[in-house]
Length: 574
Image (tube, rainbow, N blue to C red; front, side, top):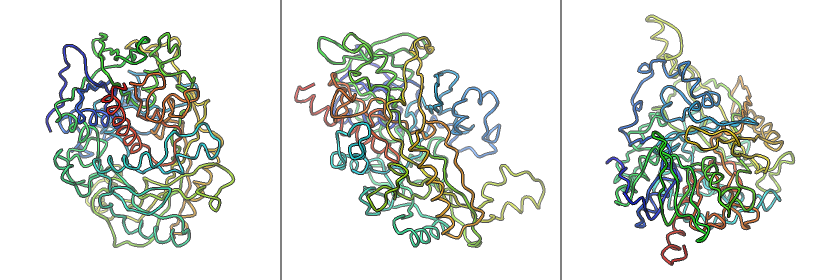
């Protein structure tokens, strides 16, 4: 794949500017460029070209100086990621050094960042599930926060549109609360997982066990192959960058698609300071950028601006974009900008062992686990009186205990080597993912006295899980143990390690969509109220959090917003 275009025009004028090159920014770039708009993408971090800049993609454990572990200095540099357990020697180059880009915490918040071309699309978990009207109507139904300005029917065609391009492998289940989509063939469950599937569905008829719906190409289609993407090789080295382009990332898919139009330019090392607002015209005219390396400030101008820097980074930019019209941050007439932080709470469930299937194994390192959709609080018959909303189980699965034991297990000699060929018994885990309710008191603000090295006020986080989430976790843990027990597993142990908010890496909210500018930051088309040519389509726009992964919803919202914006531009309404 040809390298991305980084040559900026001398006039600094474009039809559109996209802030951020991650999952949302990549989609905004692709859609804008394919619709004929000369588009500049501003990326805070360094340039990362697909394949060329994946230095550890083919490394084995013994190729790393510390066998995959971080050095003492790295632990100091990446202290938040170390705290949350996300970074290792093989992936550290795709994570932001906290020591270089610090923030403050009133209540603990793990802000997991990846500032580079492609953002966190290089290190995401890749699970993709459509939301349903169970999610989009939940706030209104329960009187929580505010109502979404859209429903499932508004996103349904856009889900299909992005799924086809992304490539989602998965199984159709026919569940109203987890709509089926455009799927490639699903990955396979192994023998223990199939055993658990049958046992769980026999005892709990409303708990289907399936393989996760993940953004991996199991049967590449022509439009995937045109971009150089190939079939998943089951290496499970995804977070190092996939040289096959088998899992979806901005670097392997949306940015190359934008690049081939001839309308695309990306400028790395561009720290966005603020968005320029023209009070007389009542619209945004451009973006102020601080060069990450030289600290020089430059202004770029465009007719359309898409803010896709990630939920917290986008909000930081909006809060810092002050004017007489918006003294508390661009679009903040409601006072809700920075509030209603949400995430998913997880690291709760159970593990156990299974005696049997000793003659069975599996091939490869499947990059995804099983999935059990939400089954609680769907209707009156499944209501749990102790909490609102629900949870699912994903990511974990079954394996042989000795897999990879030679890396971390001490030993020497022929007998030790021979023991590595004995796979050991089976073990399996179930880990829950739960919904977090929007809460105005969960917030992020700008520090009044601390600035980062580029002159931007640092962020101050003040957020935590509430009583509803804590009550839900008790049931998540108990249900996991019940399902493993019903499947004949033994030595079952439960776990609950919630950590702080942010550890789910699904931060949402802070610039929510709504129906009224008095209570929201964005309207139903992701436009900032009072600034019609500015759109926010990353996690900041979310009004509630569901219990399923949000990334495919960001993609659908972004494609939909670009379609609306370009049609409005063509009608001279923007």
